[in-house]
Amino acid sequence: EQVGALVGRDEAAIQLSTRIRNSFSKLTCVQQSATVAYFIWRNPWMTVGTDTFIHDMLGQGGWQNVYAAKERYPETSLDELESLQPEFVFLSSEPYPFAAKHVAEIQARLPHAKILLVDGELFSWYGSRMRYAADYLAKLRQSI
Image (cartoon, rainbow, N blue to C red; front, side, top):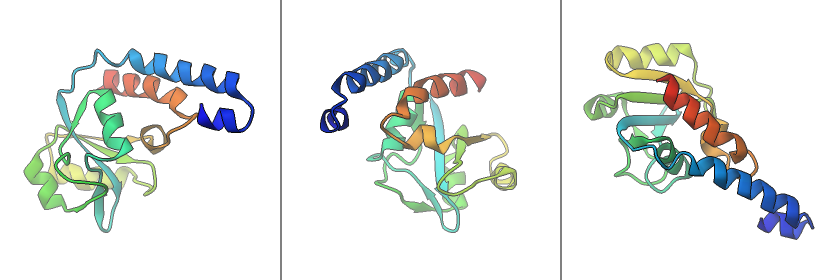
């Protein structure tokens, strides 16, 4: 809405903001229950802490971040991940381009966890792209 005001597009910005709020309001009934680790980088392994937009998006989707006790974007290890035993591991499509070989690498360490490649844009890009995020989170939740 602030950007819309700056560029003389108040009405369009308010409509978009309302659309985003409405889509996320449908997610409020989702209880945070499943535990997840969300990775953004490899070499070193990096995840997300409690004071990040991605952490908030995980919560919106109903997942509990196993790295919530950490801040920002901490480095971690597969040994630490193994000790946390998340039910899910999300490998972001960006900024690091995780692929099937990384799924296999983590699956070998966490055979009971479900490892998924996820759309990093929809977890981490705020602003107008958020109009797609709530639907993505809902579909991801339903698929697992």
